[in-house]
Structures are given as C-alpha cells and as structure tokens.
Image (cartoon, rainbow, N blue to C red; front, side):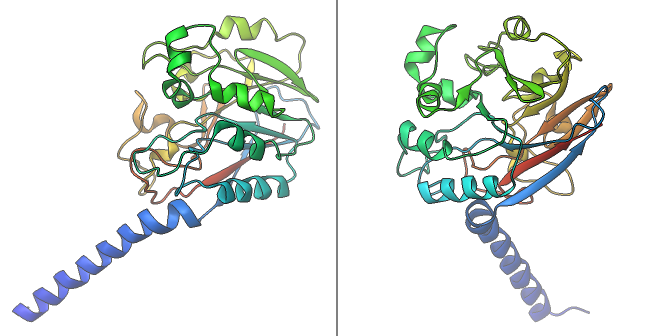
Length: 290
C-alpha cells in the first residue's frame, strides 16, 4: 500500500519532470538547437541522372531575443556548409510574437540572408506575416509588394512574386502568400506563374501555406512550403495545433498524394509563444532524383 509520503514523492517527481520539459520547450529547443532535416524525393517523370540538392529555410520570424542577428548568421553558415544546388526562402521573415523585445530592420535581415550561396541561385517568396505586418501593402491589395520582399530584392535575392525563373536544369516558381489578405483571399496568381513555365524542365514550386497543394497542377515536380512550424509542439507524429484547414495532413515533412510531392519545412522561428517541443528549428535539405 502506497503511503502519504510515497504519493507526495510521486507528485513531486511528476512536477519536476513537467517543469523540466517546459524549460526545455521554452528555453532549449527554440533557441539552442538547429537540426538538418533530410528528405529524399523521387518525383514522377524526373529526368534520369539529375540529382538536385535543395535547402529550404522557412519562417525565420527575426526579432530578439528569439531570432537575433547572430542566430541568422549561424543558420546561413550552416546552410552554406551543406553545399546546396538551390536554396529557397519560404516566407515570414519578420517577428510575429508579443515576446519580441527588439525588431530587426528588414534591411539587416535581408543583408544577412544575402550571404546564402547555392550553385544555381537563391530564391524567395512572401509569407502571410510579410503582408499582415505591412499596412501599406495590405491597403494596396493586389499588385502590392511587401516591404520585406523589396528589402530582399535590394540585397540581391530573387523574390518570386507569382513568377518562375530558370535555375540551372530546373525552373523555380513562387506564389505570393495565399493568406495575404485573410484566410480566404490571397495574393497568389497561379495562372500568371504558369505563363512563365515553358519547355519540359522540371518545375520546383514555392508556396508559403500548404493548403493550396490539392489544387496545384501535376506540372510541379516538387512543392515546398513552410507556415506550419510543424505545429511547434509535436508528439508521436501529431501536432495539437496546426494553422491549416487540413489539420495534421500537411503539418510537417514529405507528403506524397496522387503521385505528387510536397515538402513542408518545420521552420526556424516561432509565433505566438516562443516554444518548440519535438520539432526543433530546422534547415530542410531535400535531395531530388529519379
């Protein structure tokens, strides 16, 4: 029979364990860890013999103390060390949390990201927060260019606002945020992007939010997304809260549906609460081959 002391000791142990897990989720994983998450994707119709390494960075959410200048430089250095053929930036570069005590100017963030190096180029798109935190772009509606996108362009990074560009043996296309003006109205224009797609070179498609994936054409060999942060808390392959109408269907990782491939990055920063548990900040490295 368990006595009073045993019960109290057990409760004390559970409390200590819970406090330890909370400390890890709030103080260690979001700030001190940086994982390289590898995916190997073999899309239908991919050219034989072509092997492509794509590094994806999503949801930086720059702002001290969570994402400082030094942290951005660490991420850039670690990404370059992977020697990717293409590096893609998947949106949400600025802060989105009331816990940010110092906002980093767009130009400072862009200049640090401009140190990224990849054989066939570095390409970027916008995320919903790049629009939501820019009242001028929001008031202008369609045709606007968020301030963060202008800063990236000024730093020499190609921002793909509903267009596609050649990148060595492939095309890289990027849609503006599908949530730019709310959950049901975006700045994306897929028909406009597809007008840039000619020939038979594989198309890599960048979209911030994954919810558009079921509506994308098979012409896209691989689609890259961010936005979800993997739920920021992920236990046994499940995230309690995902900013998606599909719940955990597109929460994180490599998803294959009807012969089409989607890779959702777990991202680097945080929103709302500065917590991560079970889904550390990641550089997503995707090897694509036949």
